Length: 196
Image 1 (spheres, one colour):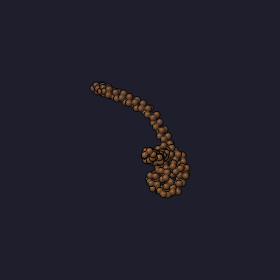
Image 2 (cartoon, rainbow, N blue to C red):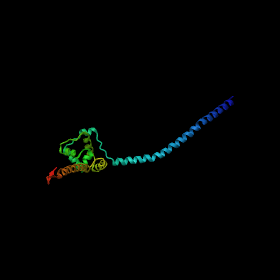
Image 3 (cartoon, helix red, strand yellow):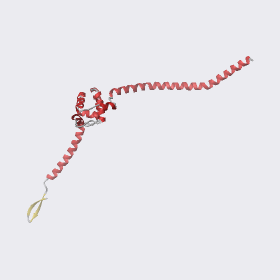
Image 4 (cartoon, rainbow, N blue to C red):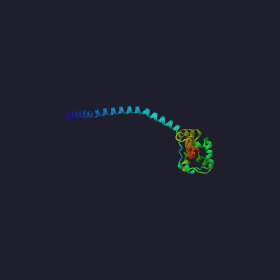
């Protein structure tokens, strides 16, 4: 009886292993193929990730941002003297500060003379400029300069408008100054000149 039991056990184990192999072999193939595709994708993604990180580092070097906490904005005070000293410390002109702050040049001059005070969003910009050095400000200007209209463009537009209106005025004056054609009318044998 012991022999029969042991043979039955071994036969059941053998059949169970065969059934497990039938089920597990296709799964193993699938797992192997999936591992291959994952490794290929990793190999393809790795250079892209490296490239992306280098690009982000370069952008971080080039891109200067004026980020200031709201608490720091509330604490900061801007008197005309402080705005002037900030501009002189950074060695930028009124025009350049206007481009950085997103205001007009007379607005910056108004801040410096005390006629106007900067609004909250402009205070944030000025507080951010306090943290930066000259090189960062130059980089920031290089980024913002193409966006901002230059004074020359505005002046040329105004001049062309003025020239156009001046040309119209001159044309009107010329018409008004032109001598009126004289008509000659014969009256009883005499020529009489008539205006008009």
